[in-house]
Image 1 (cartoon, protein in one colour):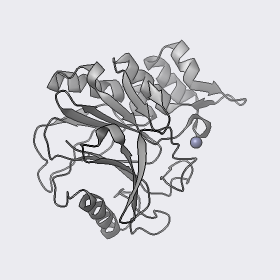
Image 2 (tube, helix red, strand yellow):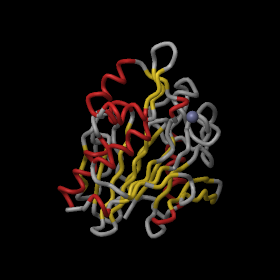
Image 3 (cartoon, rainbow, N blue to C red):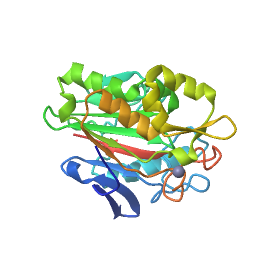
Image 4 (tube, rainbow, N blue to C red):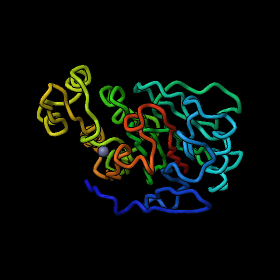
Length: 266
Ligand SMILES: [Zn+2]
């Protein structure tokens, strides 16, 4: 597994600032920072979250700017009503305009021209591309989703739907909260113990003096993907809470913040 920020390229265009994964240069994709949108504080400025108190017109304009950058204005973008679960939606066709959002935290497709778009603010963005089929996937892994194995469930869905081989699936672990910034209680650790072996968990969680834990959520997702057979995993190694100048962080900003976007399309 490789880690570090090297294959990720910080890109600026028309005020938008986002990260590209250089091995995926043939795909429209990006992990967007909070820069380049129209939302005022505390959502400044490229907020894509429609349920965080920001004005709907501002959120719509932010979406428009992001999609226009890729020439995808008016495209049938697929997104989800995030519920912190582990269900995976398979997309065989573009969503109908105005249709209710599926309630799930992961989606996969082998169809071109269906951009996948999800929103984050500390939870772990997981982006997948299998150039052999080809097929793509995207997942949102908070602690509940991580404990339910949403990462591995997405890989399993790509195997079942598109006969993807885990060894050929490339994974990108996006900006998310780091272990130093993510203190959790016994309830979270109890859920993690059901999914991860004790020796693995010991490497991803450090006990604090007052009986709590510092949990490495991106590392647990990498582990879940390795256990699912993936060998090509790149971790952005950017903490949303340490870098809330660039990204939104639910923890670091006391819940009063926006959501940044990750977009991926065949
Ligand atoms: Zn941090």
